[in-house]
Image (cartoon, rainbow, N blue to C red; front, side, top):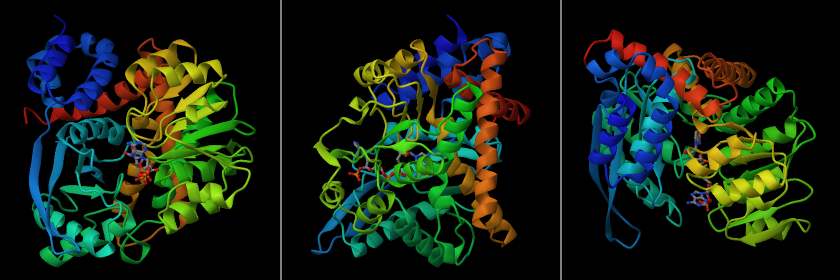
Length: 444
Ligand code: NDP
């Protein structure tokens, strides 16, 4: 049996009830076959893949808090510190009812390669809770965040592990978490990123993942003889990533015509009105029906459906496994020629394969959504320097990073005879740096 197959079998046997984690490991190791086989004996002797697929540390904890009725609630808290070979653990916190160990491990595993691709010194981790901030009062969210941090603070620090936001964790939650950390530790340090601008946050962090997605998409199109300007873009999601992807798509001359949330989606033939979308989602925290009410030309549909809209470019920006095989077939039939993931693992494995087989340019999230974590690393740098850069400085660095990421994965794919396979390219480029660092640091 090849070493990759041995490693995959081991992960499956040890984590039989973790489908998302198994899916992520399978996708990465399959595309690393050519690289591993070149060095198979050394990697096997050093148990490189076993170490790569086993988190350095998993912390699981109880999060008790009191709701507005005086009832005690209990949620599960997680922090998976996956790999610190190239820097302190770095990765977001997700608060969503679907959070479990499998989801956090899949996200932490992906984060290792994503962070490596940015070219910045950050290891991979992820955390979160099955707490649902939706429908909770500000006081309840604060009570939860304070309880969560009262346990988490033991394991994190500016040079150890630096969490950030993710689904359900935005500026409000980061503020409460930071306040509690500072209070417990009596330490003002850059322990979290995504902070508010008045207390150590970086300009352009809010926009970074969505903007970065579009910078990379534009570069991918350019290097394939196409251009983004004038194209119709379909976007899923209506959160942080989707909103700023839509904003930057407009700025680059494209026309984004859809967005979605967990209950329905909008088709706006005139193009999504970003100011209105921000008002509905960032200010009112309302459903997309409010968008349709304020915009007569737009149509609201219940359920899923953005991938049925004819487009040139598709940007899944909501959540994992939201673009399935049937959706991929519809996109291809409608002439879509590029898909770049804003969310983490939004495209299922069979849908990815279908898109690639049908000549669609496909960029995986670990590369195309790396702008968020890259800018978080720039926030860490600014915190260490006790300086703040201007929006333009951060944005220019972000653009450089995204363009470099694309060229690195393009070159890695070519080097290993898989030209145009950006999934393989991203995994290979991300893997080699981490594997070299692990090798140099001995058996730890
Ligand atoms: P937000 O919480 O801001 O937004 C998520 C959006 O997706 C919301 O519109 C939400 O709808 C929708 N959504 C969430 N879960 C589901 C579901 N199960 N089915 C359908 N729709 C759903 O999160 P972000 O925009 O920050 O994150 C989106 C994705 O991007 C995630 O995969 C995240 O891991 C990834 N990502 C985020 C980064 C960041 O910097 N924010 C960085 C890199 C990756 P509703 O409003 O109804 O909840």
